[in-house]
Length: 324
Picture 1 (cartoon, rainbow, N blue to C red):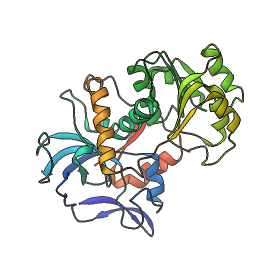
Picture 2: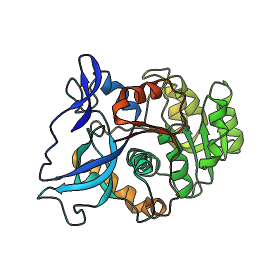
Picture 3: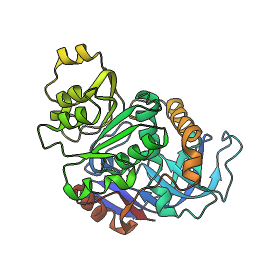
Picture 4: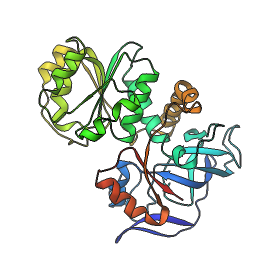
């Protein structure tokens, strides 16, 4: 099969053996694969969790048809079924996924490319907004870095779960202008030093109960200011830097729960549970087409390196997809 493989000379699309599913895995004929920020590091030869280095096939999410099912896979997944999956090695014509990370495509006319945009965003943001953020109906939420694919999904999930106020941030004016299409009541530019004041103004001085932070770095103390007493800050990403100043006194005064999350140190059982919880809460909305992501551009598998370069340039809105 063809696959986008990490080599000493960079990412190359080349022939490799078809993967063999383990007893707990499903083999999928990949039709489309979604790109994620973590793929940039893996393609550059860095480790991401348990994957990385020369010989690694890049890709964390994909959609396609089931062609083989391991002996330990429970009923409900069958050959020929159209599915979306999270897993490793998605930039390829065939990939495997643990059965607990496989979801059937809705009976609606959802295409392969749209389906490939969803697994990581749905799992990441349901885990951040609901499981760890504990968003309750009627609470306010702020999503830092809301114009990314995962961020846009976070806005929609917050709205679907009954948030009273949904705030998203982006440093790009054009992207901020579009956040309302995905559920944001207010879009904020965090390059303005007074951005926490806008959050406080919008919440009557109280602050938001939940912040999902994909940026971190220099925004840490602003998040503390914008968060309500007994609020929750969920650290999902560090696009703005892995280190920064932190006002420990303000953190204590607000009695804020600061929660770090990542898939890299989670067990297989934990990831299965994340997918199970997400589907329990959100699958009717997915099936109804209410949770969707815009596709910025589709590249053929042969142009995987060009697709990653497009992502690295950071000029896209929504998801970038490979057609496999």
